[in-house]
Amino acid sequence: MIKRRLIHTFFFVLFDGISGGFSWSLFFLYRKYFIESDKFGYQIPVELDKNFYFALLAIPLYWIGLYFLAGHYKDVWRKSRINEISKTFTVTVVGVTLLFFALLLDDEVRSYQSYYKSLLTLFVLNFGFTIFFRLLGASLIKTGLRSKKIGFNTIVVGNTQKSLQLVQELLKVGSTQGNIFKGFVSVNGDAGDHILKDILPNLGHYKSLPELIKQYEVEEVIIGVESSKHADINNVTNVLEDQQVVLKIIPDLYDMMSGQVRMNNVIGAALIEINHDSMPQWQKIVKRVLDVGISALFLLIMLPVFIGIALAVKMGSKGPIFYKQIRIGFKGKPFHIFKFRTMVQDSELSGPMLSSKNDARITPVGKWLRKYRFDEFPQFFNVVIGDMSLVGPRPERKFFIDQIVVKAPHYKHLHRVRPGITSWGQVKFGYAENVDEMVERLKFDILYIENRSIAIDFRILIYTVLTVIQGKGR
Image (cartoon, rainbow, N blue to C red; front, top):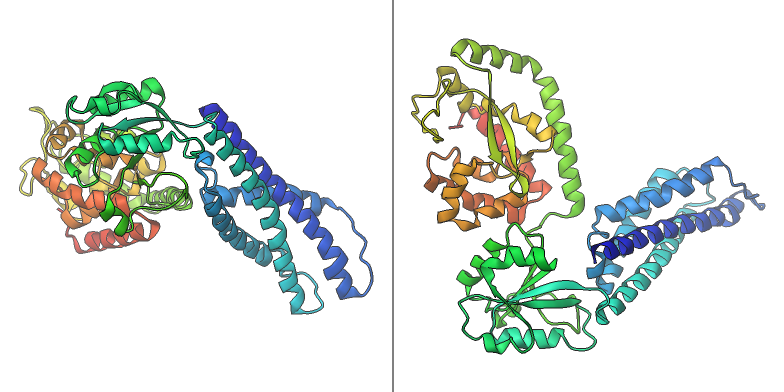
């Protein structure tokens, strides 16, 4: 299935490029035959020079890049034809406007009305060809989903009457939601297994979902319990946190009235998709570019300060200048975090320990570094190499994570994004001195993840800079 989806994605990219190149070629002829001929009063001969062929290569790549930033190639099997029209319209407006100011504003024209005609013509050509091929491709995919030739391997969680009704609806002839059911798992024991067992095989308990997802190559999990049963839903989502699956919930009347249910498919079943990825694709790319650019520039500009801090650390106490420690980062992968050493050497011989406000292990130089957060400066190197981001939840050691998840299993949600040098939790709460404070700080980081954007990152960075300047770090 994954191979076929990649092939379909390739064809969407290919025809977007063809549409961009073909529309630009026709627009080139339009400019020669109408705009320039109208300006000079005679028919301008058409010459396909090197600039034309260069544009014929660059323009398709330009459009493909814009569509990629807008997330058009994220999952081509889940495309909605109505959404495709609106999204393509928006991107085309932006793309044509940028091309106009970059390439067309210097054209020699008879009047400013010619600019408007050029802008409209390029828009109509590009949008027309692009949306034609996209709707054709989306319709062919819908046909494949309807016939079950392609689809998403799915497991249902729960064995309630609502689960039965949902499965029956999704199994109807003509359904285009593409669910290929592999079975169901129970939530609270085996009670009620008879409800679904005649339709789907019983795959066991929900706690075995990670193994089942790998075994059956599952892409979608539907929680068939009431959305009001928060405890059951939280338990299931915590088990699935590290799994790359689409998670959906059967809504109740309150969910529908509160606007949480979105109609992406008129004929299909109404479901709430739990989407923790609030940041658009283009913002993710911009965020990473800013991370690397700002961090590299900071390391370069602050090199003299680094040297001064390094000398202060070395002369202040025995031991290395830098402190290296294994932390858990993006998708639960361990990495080495770097800091200026702020504690005496061998400060954790008896085991991992969190620091406190009046920790005797902190050196005099270390207290000053922590007050102004200077000890965090080497982490800009972690950002450059991709282990961290400028803004994101603070990474912790596995020793403490194992204690946190006992009290707050939803801590695993933090591993959905790169950890950061600073975070909302760090700004609002500061350093945590024990596991309970880590749990308390967690709510700020969860809230950040659910609402993250470039704008919020900038606000957090501003507050962090103010904290450093005012020496309020602890």
